[in-house]
Length: 498
Image 1 (tube, helix red, strand yellow):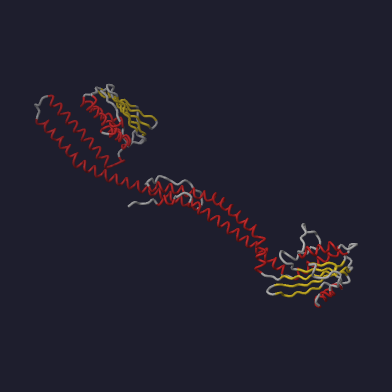
Image 2 (cartoon, helix red, strand yellow):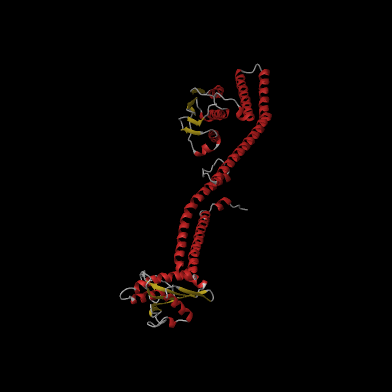
């Protein structure tokens, strides 16, 4: 059964970023919408209160009476302008721009809400709007109900008067009569206004909404565009930091706990990254200790096996050779020489096995080694046994750790074995160079040489030598050979001083 990768699902590009952009845009748009509704309420409620407040209407009529006095006090009276002002106030005509006349405005749209008349000091109508409401030149009081005619008579006496009645369902009808006087209180006439507001909350709301909807929707569209842009910019930085965590998690999922999340700031996300890095470090240390414990257990088991089998067999072989040497004192000289060499080789094998077993048991606890002495201890017996001349030249070297010296010794032993078996050489030169923590071991012979091929380097003894070199820090293994021109093996690595 195949298993999906949950990390790849979480890291689909753009998903988180668009979620953040949508959240930011919706939040900003909702905030702007709430502010616009509050603004709408602030505008609508005072307007509704004004339309239903008779005192505000009376105040406006009194101001209009003062403006009408200026037109009537002219010589001759400016009746045409006065009529135009009344018609503009009731919406019969539209003057654009509105002249600074009476200053009255009793309509918004639709049918007039007011009927206005101006009478002279004798009570006759001079101008009115709408035009068909009253007869110009006739007494105004005679064209009104008795109660309202009394208001006109009171205004003619110099006192403003008004009355207000409710209109169903929530409307208001206000009648105002205001004296038209000059600045020195000279009576010029009367301004009479019938103001009716058949008020309907829903109708007023719809009317006000028709005026405010376009700018409100425009503001919402602007907020939407700004929210998308600012949200995209802000979310991109957050998503970039999450992707850094995702990349590190992918490495950890593959067992690469050395990977770390780069610094992501000092906010909560940065603290999470620090905690994840600390967790990865603890896991890396735990796995390292587990590997070290497993390696130590395996080395201990291998050491016991070597000690109980191979080493005992080599020891038995050495005893047999010693017995043969003791019981055959009259054997030919050549046989005694070969027997002595065999005993020496067995002794070397015993020494090597003892060193290997000790290294396996103690691991990195072996003392630092003198590498030239180890190489010389390998090279001298080999030269005596094979009859091939061998020289070692080296520069002064510091002591190096055992786990780094042992692979180099094994590489020399493997190379010398190949030389003895295949090269037909008569001379081997070993050189050891040390430069600023980097060591170079070269082994050259004057044998028959061979053709170096990738297949040859990937199999057999050369492959094992290459593997040993690769186990060293910065290890590099090269072979140079040509038929009839000998062979050169070079190993380079970095060595830490013990």
